Amino acid sequence: MKTLYFDCFSGAGGDMIVAALIDAGADATQLVDALKGLDVDGYNIHIEQIRKQGFAARQFVVELTNAEDHPHRHLSHIKKIIDNSQLPDRVRQRTMAAFERLADAEAEAHGTTREKVHFHEVGAVDAIVDITGAMLALEALNPERIACSHVPVGSGTVKCQHGIMPVPAPATAILLRGVPIADTEETGELLTPTAAAILTTVCDAFESIPAMTIDRIGIGAGTRDGKTRPNVLRVMLGEAEAVGRDTVTVLEANIDDAPGEWVGYCVQRLMASGARDAYCVPIYMKKHRPGVVLTVICDEGDVSRLESIIFAETTTFGIRRHRVQRSMLLREHATVSTQYGELRVKLGKRGEQIVQVAAEYEDSAAAAEKHNAPLRKVMQAAVSAWENG
Image (cartoon, rainbow, N blue to C red; front, side, top):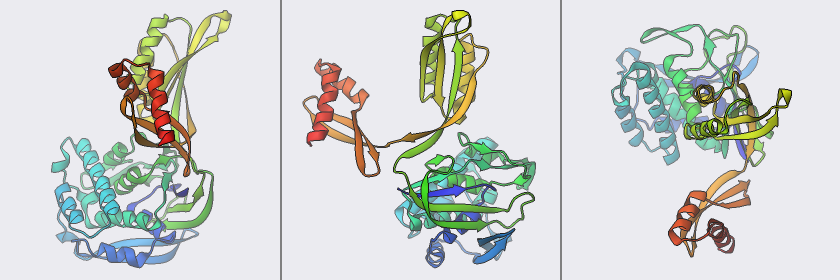
């Protein structure tokens, strides 16, 4: 599977993303020509091959020619610019999705709505060019899967339109909900809101580098110099195993002094509150007391909420936590016609090969109740219809 991996060992900016993708093979001339089709002026683009703190790197610089004349824009203005362009459909969709994420994050940070947000820095010309340029470069490279490392955000404070802000900036922190952040000794803002919006829009997973055969490497340089590490972003493009991968958090608690009803109710609450899975395994604990291991699989952004439920609903005094990577078959759905009506089946694919076929439970259960038929027969009919179709 053609995979693109963002190695953000020193953070990322929108300009660094574009530069790295160009360095990895996206055609710079075509990208700049496409950007000229946007109804945005007052800037020049400079793309240079430079040496950045020991790295041969590409730099993508948007130079404003009349910075004081650029208005603050609302999301509606951005949408009009993108809708009136001749950009490819997926580029328009991804660009608007990134700006909508930015608008929602800014709105939450400042207690307003996305329609009322003045974009300030993130709505300036360079952000429009950076986000659209990144989506154009991705379209040119056309990876089947995009992944990203855990992201360092820096520390300290940064000066912006609203004054002195903590790092990560409020909008950046909101955009990174559920995304694993890497620790770093580097101070300052390592990840900009623009880069956070791009990465959280296009990346399928935030994980360690997957098993892959590297074909191309691109290095994009930022404008500042890092104090403890080079201020560059690396992307790698190549063939990875034809399975999906993601990173989840596993919570575990040993419980031996709670009634079964409490534990069962806790599992129900955990599933209703966003856990990917929750289950119990019987064990013998100290003094040979029977108990259970309560295990919860969840996204990192849900950990605090789910831990609160475990502490509230059980008698445990401690919860173990660790992050794990999962390998997953890629999933697709198909609809088949059966004697019980139209039913969906779930297909598990490894590359182009379908290795698992399963009937969707909710569809099958509804059909079983409607036709007063055993659930197993309905599910078997769905799988048989796909296999014989």
